[in-house]
Length: 446
Image (cartoon, rainbow, N blue to C red; front, top):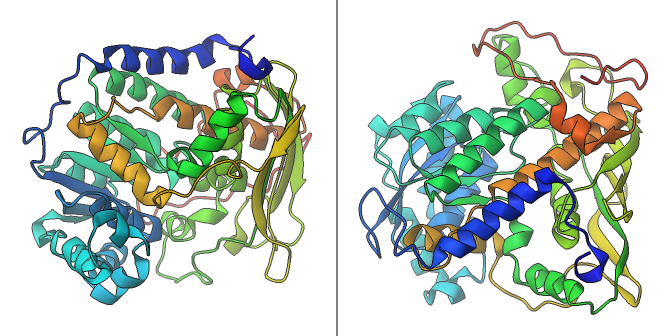
């Protein structure tokens, strides 16, 4: 037993502990992780893969986090997305509106000066703008030190693997896969990244947020007593990126432009969005659940092509190896319905919402990039978030599959699952039938 009754549980959970312990043990031996252009305050060259809203914001966050970073290469499967992102990154008003309001205090510069600095370090020339399904390979092959992987998550395992194989430091958005086969592929690349001391920072930004960091430590120190239960809730609105289909779009182009409606590329809400609150619970518990039962369905989403094949609500009861239960609920209901995102950790002597015992810090979306750059330069111990975000992604996939199938799903079942949702061919005009919405007892877990 560990502090607060938490157990070190499975051999697979042990992998993350081993990776973290090995990195900590060797940190004193790392003078500076190797950079393509040197060490210290020499400029880092970054590339962006995935130029939607989150990718654009990630680029701004990275450029805000360190004045010696330049964005030099960008890629997306859509030219219009890339050009819109590039235009926004060069637009002072857009940057003024998008920049964290206290980032100026962090940098010691007035906001207008910070915005000007960010804009001037976007030095992407036309020869380093790539729009194709293999754009990520072209960005990675550019003369860059670090790559931001911000595409829809169905593509994450292949892109992450390619970045590691090319010895790039990585910021990867969450989740890291939409199926178990992809998650295991990602995990294999995480281990390779650790061997090469390639920094990996994940977009689970709560782990970079001072309020959460301090509160989790106090929970582990026993301030609320032994943890006896947890809840995770993500009640939000629907996420739809387009409201019509252009007749010129083939099925694959359509599904990419409307990616949040299709399980293969988004993973459903529990995997793509609710991962933040579930990742927090795994962090508190120090491991992943051993099993889950779940339910869900479609309450309001019409059975139309626009709405794809994801659920609009899921609830789950996860059980950790020490018997502690996590109650989980997420939904995407239309405007006018109650919306809130929160966690509760119940202890024998009190409760916490995860931030109530912490102090205010830098915007976590910027702070995660501060960690990224500081780890690359060797200013802090080596950082590799790969295993924790992979375990949380698999936890969410486990919950989704329990809801879809109506079965109890265990950690070993999801780790052994042969589910592989990814198309074997990528082509804008590729015909892709949309699988039906999952029906428990009819849906097959593989």
